[in-house]
Image 1: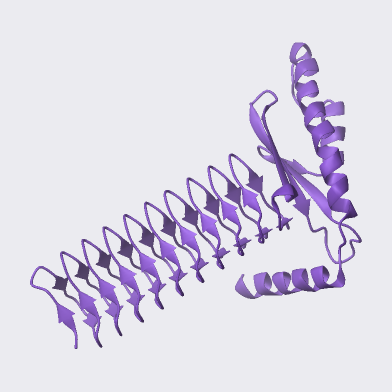
Image 2: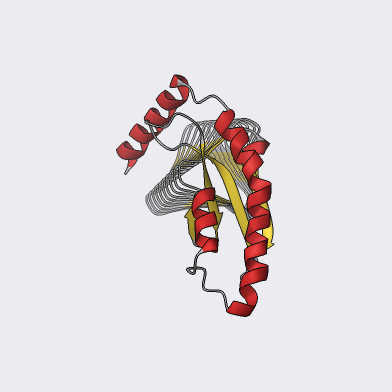
Length: 288
């Protein structure tokens, strides 16, 4: 039985079928489909070619549109938006003012909330949380019990999993491989721009024999050794009167980071790790 209530609007070529419910001031329009035991209610709006099915719920002022899919036991609520070719499924929840878009997937028991963004081909799954003003984009993966929050930015091919946390103004990119909280270090404000410098564990490719590192400082990124060479030379752009104190800032960062980088290099880089990254590379190539 399909159920709609008198205040509900279902129009255009939209369909509501099965035991689906559309109630309250919710709207379903365009070529959207709401099916099975799904429930769209409150002031929610499902439109375009979006699909909501299974036991999924869309509520509050949430928007699901484009070619988005929400299914399983997933719940999109609050002022959240799911759009583009994004999928939210399993027991995942997207709430608050969060947005999931592009070709992003959020699934498992993952939670995306507050003002967080998950975009492009990113995946958030397992018991992972992304919240605050955090953004996960590119081909990044956040899984396990990992958390990304604050103003953190995870992008590129980064893999954040296990018990890792990425927070504050951290930037995690490239082939980052974070599986615990000690796999990332943030220091700031540093230098002439008052930047937050992020140093994290990094996979350097199939020929590597140990874990590497990547430093992100504003628009610059490179290894810790490359940072040392940069601040020792003349490419930094500091005035003569400021060079001493800003160089001292970065020297302090490097002093703090070198023991952590050595710790990562001492961790085993196994055949299993290489195989895992080979799969990541294959998936990225397939999705591009």
